[in-house]
Length: 491
Image 1 (tube, rainbow, N blue to C red):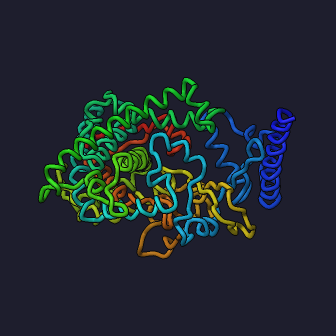
Image 2 (spheres, rainbow, N blue to C red; image 1 turned 180 degrees about the horizontal axis):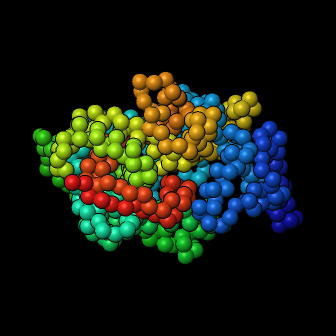
Image 3 (cartoon, one colour; image 1 turned 180 degrees about the vertical axis):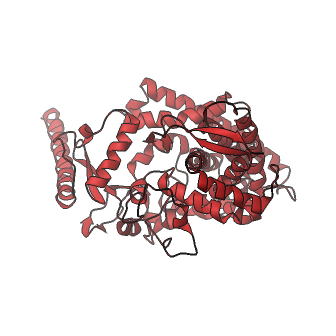
């Protein structure tokens, strides 16, 4: 009897779980628009297998099915894609930031990032945010400009060696620049990604994003134990081990140095790792694992995103010579005619037009095309009470390309962000760095990095248009065919 009762109880429990999921699934589908769906596979049949095709199809759904619609998936699973600024404001401006939880998709990052600032929630997130915020004080960021400038000069020399070619894919070069900057500012170490792009750590950093993306699309990707047994799973673990070993080694070496000198040398530049090593939570120092989570998170959030932001801005400037000329004229006004002009944070902050250009680039081609949230309480969305537990996908790319928010959205027009006008007064219709209590903590760092790099490139080169980019929306918005431009050295 017991042997018979156990499977019966299991089946009844499974049926109860499925029924509960079906009720919520049916409720969501009854209250929001949805593309045609398969009874078992949801709308997965609408998507092609290639990354650019997936991104293109999803943006078509955003346009065709309203600002909020249901993405239905197998086994009564559904998320709501949100691109209504009012509903985005409701979700992101929730005053109780401790209950703001990332969507389940972010669990894919935890083997590498642990539960650092990006993936944590509740008290842990609140405590970490409080600890980390001083690391982005203007006095700290000011010291980082020297690193950004030095690495920009290295990038310029690499670009100069490419002159004479019809087109150059600038993305790998910009990506290596971003990695050099983030490693030196976050850990105080030089990985020389621009000089030695084949080092084990540099290669692993570049490969792990693709390995994580492969996990997201794998049938076993949501089952960590089973996925770890696959070839892809073992490869992802191999890359993770390399990155963890590197970060752990840096932390241990720096901790040992600080044992002999309890505070940074006077006048020395404090990096992100030093701030974490001196921090305490509830009166206790952070453990090595705590610190590694945050350093790796900073690496992930500040590397590919910055590279995409720089690459896409240079791409847009190459296709709009009139705007590129205005940027160059502003650079001459601020820095003079010399290619070796000294770049400081004060001068970078004076680059008003370049900042408008960058903001418009981040509107048209936001490095993070969407962000995910999981509701921790019943929430009113589009006039409908959505129950706790539902996952949401906030469509940054979609809201930025909605003509109701930005007239003629496919037109590259930096004047949208002219602070002397009124058209720039948008709130949650422009969110390249997210918004609310869980906005991007490193956005000021990113803007300085973008300005320093772009300024150096434009002061030294005239950019010429290459092929049109083909977008793919992985974890980070990228171009599947690279970012190819022509280069002419300025006199």
